[in-house]
Structures are given as C-alpha cells and as structure tokens.
Length: 208
Ligand code: GRF
Image 1 (cartoon, protein in one colour):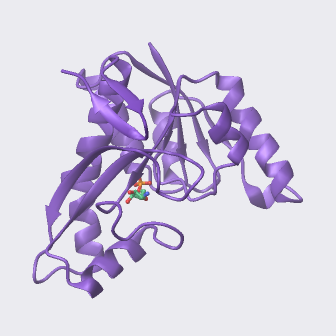
Image 2 (cartoon, helix red, strand yellow):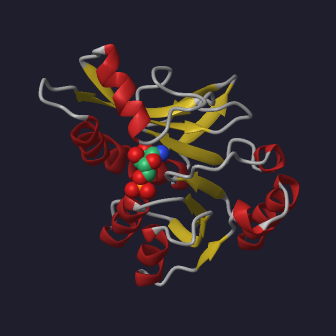
Image 3 (cartoon, rainbow, N blue to C red):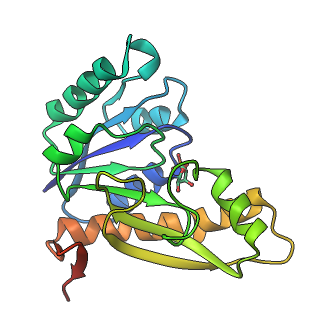
C-alpha cells in the first residue's frame, strides 16, 4: 500500500480526482493518510473531511519565520510516514530538507506542458494567461517529480489540451483541469503505487 500525503492550498479538485479514483478502483494500492494545507480556508480541507481523511493546516502565516514553518511542515509530513507526497495545487515553496529526505518521492501537477509556462511566478490562472498571450495552439498539464528547482524535476506524464479561439484564462484553466490534470494525476499515482515507475539519470521510465 502506497501511503500518500497530499498537500493542497485551494479548491482541491485534483485531490478530489485522486480520492474518486481510489474509491472507483481506477487507482489501486494507494492510501491517502493525510492532507496538509497551508490555507485554513481551502475547500480541499472540506473535501478531505467529507472523505474521512485527516486534514491538517500548517500555515506560514502562523509561524514567526520561514525556518519555523519549514520545521512544522516537515513534522506534519514525517508524522504521516508517507511513501509518496503529492503536491496538488500547493502554492508554498517546499523546504529543501523535505526534497532531500523524500528524493524522487514527491510529485507535482503543473497546468502546462513543462518546460513552457512554468517556474517562478507561473501558477494558477497566470499559467493560462501566459499561454493565451503567447498564442500557443496546444497547452496541457504535466506531472513531474519535485527537485530543488521550481517545476524542473523529471517529467512523469503529460497530456495535451487544444487552445480554442474563444478561450479565456478561466475557460482554458477549467478544460486543462478536466481533460488533463484530473486524468494524469490519478494515472501517475496508480503507476507509482504498482511499481511501474523508476527515475534514472533524471529521466522517468514507465514499465509495461
Ligand atoms: C490546479 O490548476 C493545479 O494544476 C495548480 O493549481 C490548481 C489547483 O487546483 N497547481 P485544485 O486545488 O486541485 O482544484
């Protein structure tokens, strides 16, 4: 069983897609043991509670400095003793110590086809605003392992989504979530939980 911690900041629709996948059997051998949010008001916390999953809030605002937040965040993760950490719309910089401690055991979902529209400052609607401003015809979502950079770790899976003439950032964001994020994140969890993913030399291999 892959004990999994999911870190959230907002609406939690990716968390919901994973919970639904587990309940429906599309994801096997995964147990979400804890949801951690940096935002007390995140609806993702409500989603976790409705599913009977423990949700804790560790907010940087409640610590006098970043070092103390990092310690508390690390503790909240370690207490759950996860095999995998999933960043599902988590908008806080991950402590480098956590990345070292959980090397190649942290994945993130990003709402673009990395390396486009990613890195510092590219999150939420900003990603889709940049894609529309650039005039790309295809965007999508990426699941990648987290390393010390921002959106720079080994790519596990990507799914393209067409950009349409009438798209606004909000319409595009919704379609990328529905057609890409909510599809590839559950798939990646199932692959990892069933031993089909290895990372070698900075590249991800998925076995048949
Ligand atoms: C998603 O678009 C995700 O790709 C991005 O933040 C958003 C989180 O949405 N990282 P939700 O909280 O999963 O609904």
